[in-house]
Length: 195
Image 1 (cartoon, rainbow, N blue to C red):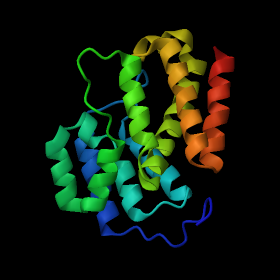
Image 2: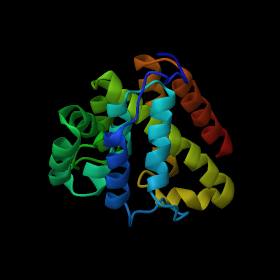
Image 3: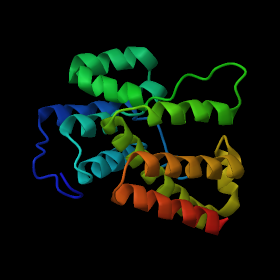
Image 4: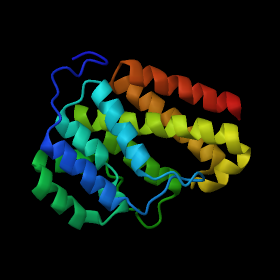
């Protein structure tokens, strides 16, 4: 399937159930600085996955990609497995950052996550690329509105966050091709020009 060709994908009752479940899980969660409901990010990631030709399972996993990390850990993963199947649960697990390991710096933790994404299957990489693309777009907007004070809301600060986006671009350029990779590359350049 090519870019923006989702004609073969049918979103059924499972997707609707996942949409409601994600909204329930993330009801109290908000985006940095803006207070926008976190659900906006999850829907945007799912939309990008579908626009890139992703399957219903991938779209469901996109809605739930932060559920384990932010909303209940392995117990939530088991609920996802029971409600949406092993394929969706495996995608969500592949998107979940490894638990922090004592003694590792922020950058080393992120290196572990980058290796996890690099070794993941096509579906996980598509979801993570969509996630990083939407986050990058949001970061650009935040910088344009709030300026440099944005960096205080990111664990890696300005230097670490810019390093991480450069690493994402390098990873996805070596693993995939297509409009999302190109767009993430442009966003990375804009971030660097803005600062």
